[in-house]
Length: 296
Image (cartoon, rainbow, N blue to C red; front, side, top):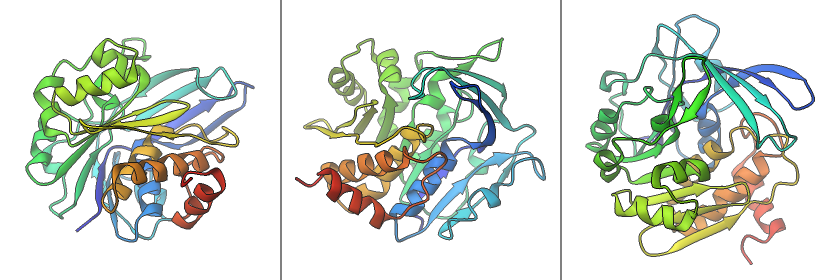
């Protein structure tokens, strides 16, 4: 029994920073989420990445520093390749292009092993078909990062958010829903994050997380929970939402919403201080929480 099974591709990222420096590295929601989940649990985590067999992406190697992560690699005729150009030091403004995409996931790609939560973490529309949400919901709680339902690749390979046309059909199957502020506004038509969370709950999702560069919000139909972000620098901004959501899903299995949210906010604050996925420990996060007053 895995604590979480994260379904989504590792991608090849080409990142050009605001100062003109360019780097090539692995990216993708599953990479950041898998490392965060592994660090926050004493149990085991499954990841199900798709890539070209024996190609440029070594899915097992990507998690070689996480001994409690089990990799169930799946074949695709293409890899997802992203090109990101950041215009500001805080990496809040960027232009992204998707040069190629994986074959979408199907029920046949899902391992038969049991999990407490299916975390669907694709990168673009088409990676995770709506029917896969229904399929997973018949087996365990489902968590969805809604970017993979909304972010479409245009003809010029740029990415643009569109409303999720099937949202009212599939939101009732989703226990944990994660959006950022821009996605929430596109889904609901309001820039008020609290109102957006209430609308998404009314449409069927059970716990709605909305991330922002200052805080993380969670709504469960009764209470609006919040936790601030306290990064001391932003050199590791990429992967912020993925880290937050994965940390929350692990902690939520053992504690209440506010405590899980505090852990997730502290985890991502600490992660944002270093590029790449989180490589610390739960004890590091606990110490950071004490220093930053999350328990005051």
